[in-house]
Amino acid sequence: MDKNILEDGLTIISQCKSKTGGIWQAHIGAAAIAGYFFVRDNDLIKKLGPNVYKQSMAMIEENCPISRNQRYSGCNIENSSDAILGSLDKTIDHLHWVGHNVIYSAISLLAIHELNGWGTDDDLSGICDLILSFEKTIPGRSWIGFSASEVKRLAINEEDYLDKIENPSQLSYLVLEQLSEFPIIYRAESHHDLIGHMITFSHALNILHDLGHVSFFKRGLPPLLKLIKVLRSSLHATPGEPIKLISPVDHLPLQKAEPSEFLPAAYNFWTKDYSRSNWDFGHIFKFSFSFYDHLRRVERVSDAYFENFRYVISQ
Image (cartoon, rainbow, N blue to C red; front, side, top):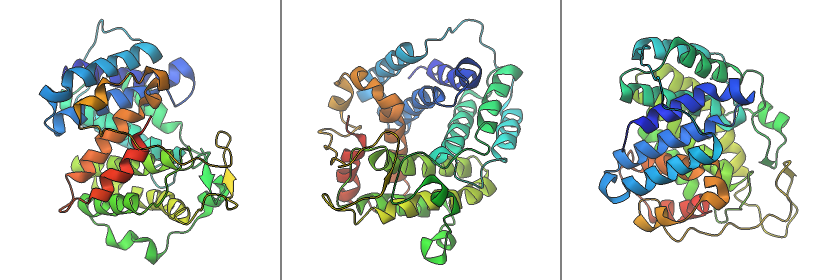
């Protein structure tokens, strides 16, 4: 795929805060970058490359069209890493917006490494300002069984596997096994979407480890495990029974998600028109990249991983 898509993604991330005042348009940039690496890392360039690229560009044009004129690559990898990690250092130890501070940081660093440097000082400052803006933000807005304040206070104990995760392979196995355990996955920000962000947040930590930032990998584990602990509590949620739901967008009764007919490694998955769902604001790219990256890190792959992922990726 054309590496220009990486620059597009980084530009969107760097301009997010200044253009919107918020943190969410960066989702589109992260998704564009994720699409590139999903295709490249899974040897799918010939099979899926043109369709994934087409979908990525359509998503960008729909949400935040940008100019490719006058691009610069004055910031090298070392300076970029120091700056972005310096910003992430302020928030890595706590759960903020289900891990998007870590997701944006890791995907930006991955793209900058692939480009062997990127952007101006102002571009880099834009990414850093975005990461810094996660300070003092909530863990997330949609939860089953917990309020945001309860999630924030949640303790991680020995049984939460913190001491058993020492490397990315172990983390990927934990996440995939957790994915496979859900007897029902609800179509809700508090459930299927949170499961998806368990997959992407953990993958972001693995990326940091891959790039040599092992201390950030370790520091990011407790916030991730908080998210996983909340999800574990929903394993026994039964349709029709009372559920404590805290969310401005989800409503009871929760509805079971419909499985996707095709998985993202299939050609037919990328022939569907996702514009109607706005590419679920980039999740079809982000969730796909992270899920398949986890798969390549474990020794044995279970069919249950794929089957439950169908409910997470469905649109």
